[in-house]
Image (tube, rainbow, N blue to C red):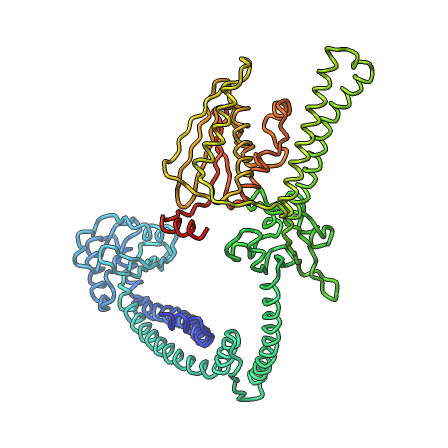
Length: 622
């Protein structure tokens, strides 16, 4: 089917088809003129053969002028019987001036004699004294007829005395025409078929060089430059074949050079640490390297090819392609957090400009500056927080010292309270500075851990027992009361940790649980083993943490309720220190919270179970 379709679309078929169509059009025109002339000639000949002689018309006119109608009718019928010797004549009818039928040559219509005729052609002839001819088609027997009505004139006074109605069948005429037409059409069809075959052969010979050049150009398009087109002459087709051969050599050289440059460019792009996007003049992406796909969180480069770069980088609301191509905007910071990528990219744009000055595209280099931006933001935030946290107690100390200097030290009731506030704020600043120093040493990696294998069940119980003792020793009824519930595994779990720093972490979390739990609240602690990890959890019934703040709860100086935390002496560094300590121990710390229902802090530490034989061997070595 494909080969037939290709043949119908080929130039050789089109040449042959044009030739045959011209021939068919010529034969059609000649045939139409020929058949038309043949029909006209045969009809004229036929009319001449059926015309009544003039003496017959005179005889009939004479009979119609007689007063004896009966004898005249007999004589008329005799005349009609004598002249009705033509097989093509169907009927000859004689009508007098009163439109009464006086005679007919058709024996089947004898009953019409003496009756008035209803034929409008006869009446018109009697009225106008003019002959009337027409061709009729009888639907009843599907026969064509020729009708001729001639007026009969009395020679003595030139009055119309009647008319002769003659009807003859035209089937013999048209049958002869159809036979001749059929012969002509048969000869024309044979001529067309022979001409078509001859035209295909000739067109094939003409288009053979074109076919070879077509095959050669297809090979060039596939990258095969080995073939050559045969040059059969020095005509236009021969010159075109030579040009195709020359083009093949030039394209091969250009393709080799282009492939070499592309391989070099692909190698450079694939090994670049920055993302690269290249566009055309309209800003649609044409080239993208692997690093750009990673930075833009796209798996397939086909998802970017053909798209506008301002849509790819999501900067359509801020910039236009014209601004980028014209070099009005060379560099920008793009925050990809809206797309869920959580990256901050530095985009540098450079137009691709030809020697003529025409800008044919744009190159965009993407560099990941997320860590730099985050560090800069955290540094600014940290400096701001430290300044704010230190300024608050210093302001309080300054205010109370100024009050004491103004004479408040002499008041025995107020002075001790002022000095107590100054002492508390000073202690708070000392704790804050110590916490900052601890964090600084952790960040610098200079903190040393005193690791030892500890029974985490006993250590956790020991820490919680201290908080239970605080409740029992507390005699002030205004102090907050709380209950600690414990759900521990009965199995001894030995974990390698720094006891002091781990105790500091539990103290921080427990103090927060006590601070934010309501009076009489229950603090639930759990300890279990799962998947080679020890999981500790501490739950309170406090106000909880809003969902938007869960991701920042371990940030330095971050407080959910800042006013309450400062009032209770918090530095905002406890959870940050806890996270650093747990990370140093190879574990993880996280929190789950529902606002208004409380929070649960989880600590996960790596745990390797010891068999009894291994434990005995280690004790023996010690």
